[in-house]
Image (cartoon, rainbow, N blue to C red; front, side, top):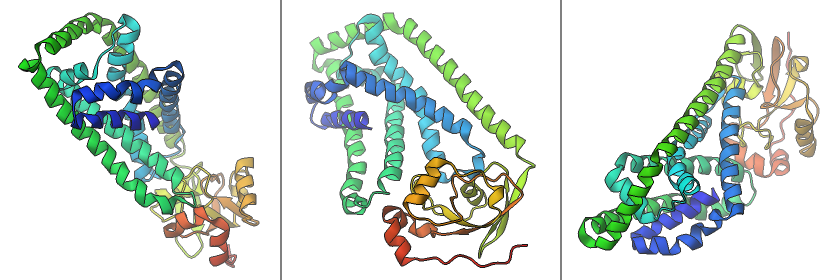
Length: 359
């Protein structure tokens, strides 16, 4: 996310001039060209790719994902293949042929010689920005101080990519005008760079094909695991009775939270089901033995908020038996407040244990 912010900031300078973009490039993007910056950047990209595929294969059912989960996972899986050609044209060309492209050359290529690649770059930057903002929002919205600073952050979330896109457009116009007669010396330099890049293209295309093949195979494997797991559990269901609510059926192996989402029932989950906020917690009225055992991270979180006996995190408690009766403890429309101040929220919204007759 830090890299994307730097990249968008540098692009926004195109609103003034192409020269200003290149002038500030060493300052804004220079740290990412160091060994430390390169290690962080490509390490993040590699781990991002692996974690995206793991997240896909670990889904217990596609229907258990909410709209934001689907968008974030889809964008995360799209970013590596969309970014591959740009990485090869920049870093790959530098490694293979000591080719270091300027902003001017990239903009001329994207606007004049390969406009579809330019459109692809707009899309991948947008995808990375939206994906990153969704993840940051899930993380930051749980912080007690977030409501105080959110009003200052949200305008920047929209302003920075808009300025970058406008800078990309204006700098692209300038690059095209300079090439078509405004600056013969610059045009000759860009043409020489294009000719040199052309000699590297076969090797870069071979590397791109290899990456796409490997990524497609890994993506197919992840989807295959998801389909196989979903098919295996298709006929094995458990009954989930919600206190004061409906009784639904859900596949064995799903969590209580996933059972709620699969059946379109409102269920608080400020951290998107990652076991960090405890807002999805439920009191188990009956059927505790039909849930997966309590693991240390879940137990530690429940102890920290003094959740009490017979309480589980709905995102961590998996259905392994025929039936369970639960009481949701946090209304879905109060999940952020409960996540930021769990003790204060519990004092104000003390929910008594449900007293029901369970057959």
